[in-house]
Amino acid sequence: MAKEKETEIASADLNPQMAALIQALSTSIQGIAPAKVITEGDPEYRARQEAEGWFDAFDVNVYQNAYEAQARGETAEVRYRAARLKPGKYIKGRVTVEVDANGVHLLYPVKNDAMMINQQHWSSFGDLINKIWAEQEAKELVKA
Image (cartoon, rainbow, N blue to C red):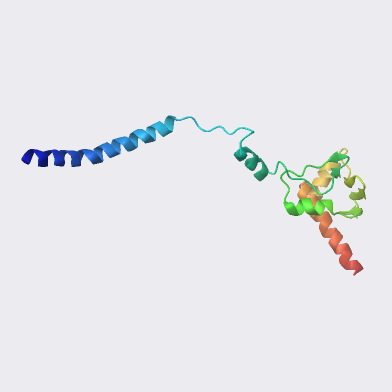
């Protein structure tokens, strides 16, 4: 009977030690396991691309000086506004917006120092679109 009690006490002390050892062993095994590689066929890969804006698009084609503008990285509001700009001259006559069957064309000077002057008026494509949109709305308020 005393021998059985002695064995129970020894096994009770051993169980927490074994549990700690097993935990440490499993942690180290997880540490050396190869990281999961996401490939093009994985749904996670597609979801990450969508979150990064790889599949964002304008409702119509939008061009900057004959080059198609990229919607990637632009907010939904900027993409919406860019596709709905109205023809006219904006930003002190510096930017001309033309709308035709091919889409919306933004035309502005880019030779020599013109780019530096442009940067005084807008800092990014989104900023350009928002400033044109604000002028459009101001012109509509004046007409009303």
